[in-house]
Length: 205
Image 1 (tube, rainbow, N blue to C red):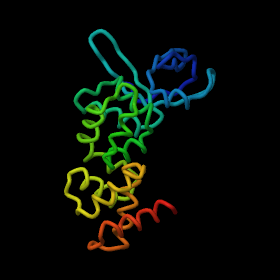
Image 2: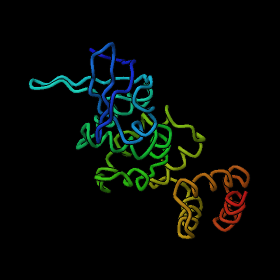
Image 3: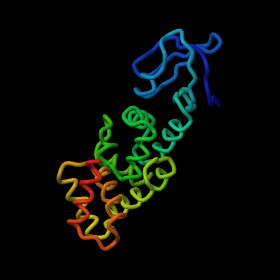
């Protein structure tokens, strides 16, 4: 099984690159984001490889990092997500942004992917939410709060404050982060109005 390829860029296709490794041209399918970051033809490149073996074909998928390849595998554990959709998601969100979006239950960010509707985005966020925090670089307290809001188990003043900030035009992850910080400084008994005021100060920083 091929796990990595190092060679020279031969040419590009719509969704793949031909990588020349010792005179053998490997056709490697990549996300749009990965293709954009690869060098010009004739220059050296290294790709982490996921090999698909079917009865009628062998297909190679290439990634800039092992983390990106791991997300490609994880995404396909979700019902309705195959290789094509997984590549599209990784073409829209880099691994760090994808991890943060899932950890923060930000379905809208995932749904920005062409070909991914709200239902598939919700499945991705729901089914991978327990795996994403290990990859995410956001404050664990914010991840916990976002999960509590999503599960409708957050304290009422906190949920109402986040909702108020979202209604003011802020994204759900921004609002959750701001209210998490506000809640830390104001304490558990803070009222909604106080949390909103402190949250707006956090967002203005």
